Amino acid sequence: MFTYDYPAQDTKIREDDKPLLADSLKPAGEVVMHDEKARRIQLRRGKKAGALPRTLSLIPSGPIDTRTIKDAIFRVAEAACAGSGEYRAARALVAKAAPRLFGGRLLAGLAGEPLTRAVEAVQALDESYLVIQGPPGAGKTYTSARAIVALLQAGKRVGVASNSHKAVNKLLEEVEAVALSKGFPFRGIKKSSKESQFFSGVYVGNTTDNADVAGQELIAGTAWLFSRADLDRTLDYLFVDEAGQVSLANVVAMGTSARNIVLVGDQAQLGQPIKGTHPGESGSSALEYVLREHATVPDDLGIFLPASRRMHPAVCGFISEAFYDGRLDAAAGNERQGIVMGSGAHAAIKASGISFVDVEHTGCGQQSEQEAAVVNWLVDSLLEQDWTDREGNRRRLTLDDILVVTPYNMQVACLEGTLPAGARIGTVDKFQGQEAPVVIVSMTTSSGEEMPRDHEFLFSRNRLNVAISRAQGLAIVVASPRLLAVPCKTIGQMKLVNALCKAKAYAQRVDDGSGAQRAA
Image 1 (cartoon, rainbow, N blue to C red):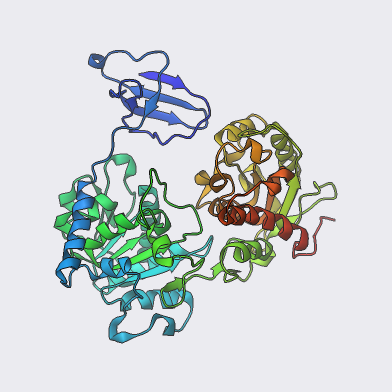
Image 2: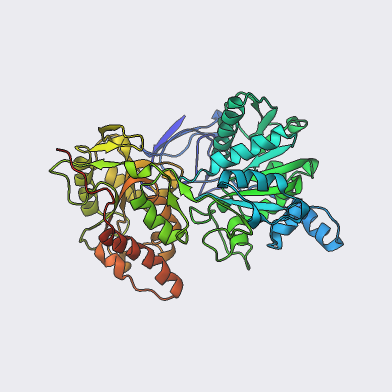
């Protein structure tokens, strides 16, 4: 066993991975422990391979074999060139055609609540595709699971896919919960590469062998499973979760397995990680590709879930206005949740909404001790306040109730050394899918001159959306005021910086919406 500590940095190396030595490209061993918070990694290496040096650099193992995915894409292309009727759903997606429903029904003509319309639309698909867009807290997993169980009850064979096993497992967990509540057993299986990716459930089993998926009513896995020729056109439906992070190419390849494709996700949240350049729209995620310039899915292309059960109206109002064409509302009852403040609360703390705290500093790129100090004051003050949830239950705020988000791992390390032990600190990527009563965002960088990366990273609209929308009651943005005056060279860069400017303007003009309640 060889144990190493490393400086703050982004890394994709995980437990069970087999990284390479950067200088020789030879295998370094197997990662048996990786504590990202402590920045410590342990490698297991056979005696025959020899000892590892005292210092080293690791890189992920070689490129993944994509032949299965490429072959599936070629099958779709060949069918299109031949004018055959195969893979109609995947081809409709590539053509950006409107979803096709049985009997020539129009998607925009479906009536009822969003859940009812979503389930009805999915069941009515006629070898086509459908988009279900779920903004933060709007219930895309809730909706997808109920649609999947309805299909299973109707005797349909369903696939569940995503970019990550974590996302697949989360949806499977909700599917099983719905099936159990209905007393409906089914046969399902999840294909994984290793046991650490397995799903722990009642109806859905696990396998590392592709052959085991035959005959199952529900099949779960990633692109490498659903692109296989032996699954070609064997499913009635394929649900692609987090489709805003799944490439168009992978969805087309997976689409060879099913008669219908359901894309579930939100292109306004974190997108797919991309390396290299891609011609035309080939580098787009499936959702980005089909929705084009639309911030929200039009009624003739899919279902928009319009109510967030997470955010207070004073937070949801900004998120809706800035990222969702004003179509997203806070669910009824969310207005009851908020902070009950004592007389000595920090000035940036209010019952609900968004606050913007200016912190003057210079020379800061990826780390700001000045912002860390302010965040610490905010956390100390928050721990002296109470929280009331949407059910009216009141309690004292704890460290678990506060998310501290920052763009850079160096600032994560700085905050970890400043805030109390146990504070929830991380980058946006760490907290997607999570929520808390309060979110504090530390922007860190002093100005455009110190910006270590491009506008598209620090001012990413998707990242700002995810960061602020984790907040159930209050989001506090801590930033250098000079960030709002960063020079821009393109209209696109202006739009990016404008989102942060809009957050400050919104914080200044919108009252907390609950009368700034304070404890007696």
